[in-house]
Length: 333
Image (cartoon, rainbow, N blue to C red; front, side, top):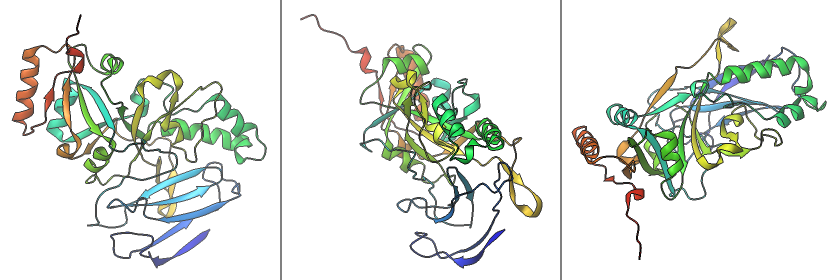
């Protein structure tokens, strides 16, 4: 065992928070296969993103070549905001560029009534490839004798952990584009009844400042799952990658993860493959900050538009409601 004595956290580590103390016990035994496999380990303690007010902080135990992130709440009454920056999650080139959230009418009304963003658990999305890795990634990790992942016991443990992790990650999907997308209208909204929420990357992050749950946000990378290696430094890398067949989505994704663990002897967290987060998560947010405008589907009838406008106003919102740009009339000369 390695015991780290309590000490105050310095101003260069935590921002906007008075110094706090903590104590953490680490095991030198690999949590996956109970062997002394680690050939490099380091403890990182500090603010995940000093530019955002924070309530919780990240204590990450980095294993080579794996990283397990455990989120601890270490105090009450601390400032809010938990957007975590990480090298695997890349922001769009323009933080003020347009992003879209395509939803059906029930999901839109749920957004207004709950003032919360709906996030779905990955294993319930209906896509068996979500959260998986490519064939070359498996072959590279498992066949390279220089890596701990070449050990059979660790391979089985990793495979089981990745399967469990799909039940412990929730996401919210956004589309990056300057204009509406016919494909996205057809894919994510019922014919003639969909709604698109227009916003920006910067607005999205700001709108979630009051949510005390750590989250990542970044652009999805697209790969050939038969030829490309899925690169990344954490176990969350598979959740920010998708097969290249989905490239038309140009997706921006919010990712929330919980450690699939439960307290063991002495209160030490241990991996528990029976753990699963709820089927969905509602993330409280400021709709006044998030929404630039609401765009109605191309074929929505007038009475439908009137009903949406009335419901929006009745719930206390004054978002601009716009007709789709696809409803404009063409010219013949």
